[in-house]
Amino acid sequence: MIAIGCDHGGFELKQELITMLKDKQIEFIDFGCHSKESVDYPVYAKRVCESILSNESDKGILICGTGIGISIAANKIKGIRAALCSDCYTAGVTREHNDTNVLCLGGRVVGVEVAKKIVETFLSTEFSNEERHIKRIQQIEQ
Ligand code: RB5
Image (cartoon, rainbow, N blue to C red; front, side, top):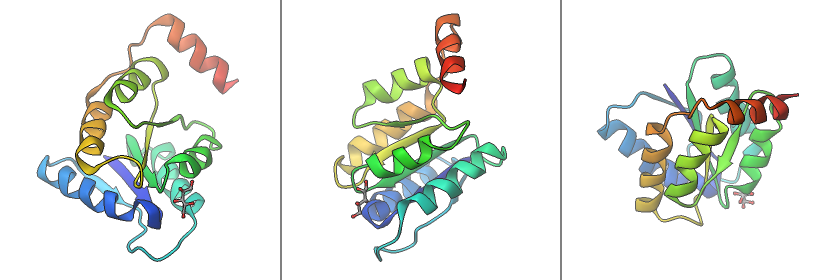
């Protein structure tokens, strides 16, 4: 299950990604927002992250205008490791090395087709499970 959420700056990209998730028959929960009306991104970061922490969702996708605010908000929540990505390389390596559970995107930064590839990469790449990466993640948690 994928939890997806955004603010007004990410609304249009969220709708595009939802179409992609439906086409790929990937189950998701849409935590809003539901229009381009101005809202506060920490609210949507919290909703998506809580869905992951309660095991309702496996991973999350968060989108704001730059991806920065919503990634800062998500990374304040214990147990969340959120990566702001604008390319497929970082989307893959952050899964392999950081075991990130939230992908953040800038709706005003990345194009729709690039964003779709980033999401595909993030969702299909497994954590490497290598000792050095596990140790570093534990250090972050501590
Ligand atoms: C909203 O205008 C904008 O500040 C927000 O979407 C995001 O870019 C914040 O980091």
